[in-house]
Length: 74
Image 1 (cartoon, helix red, strand yellow):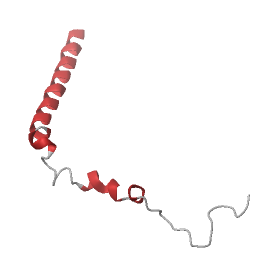
Image 2 (cartoon, rainbow, N blue to C red; image 1 turned 90 degrees about the vertical axis):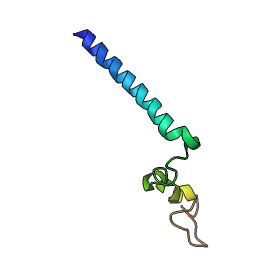
Image 3 (tube, rainbow, N blue to C red; image 1 turned 135 degrees about the horizontal axis):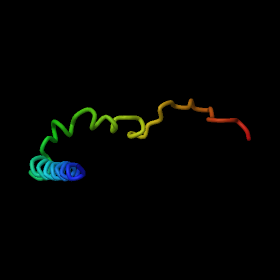
Image 4 (cartoon, one colour; image 1 turned 45 degrees about the vertical axis):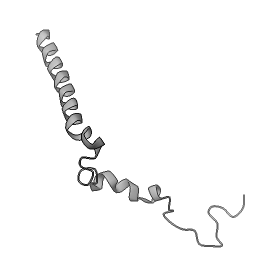
């Protein structure tokens, strides 16, 4: 029965490797990875992080002029 586990494991490993090579040569290799540049790579979920306050380096709330953040004296 252990040979069955070995055969299934080898089949899964081979399928993963073949799938990886197939995806690379159909999507990434042609045109230096520019396939899907305006569709899949520009999807909202892949670009939304670049439009956040952290990515843009903007403070979420501004401190009014003349005031300080934290205690006034130590």
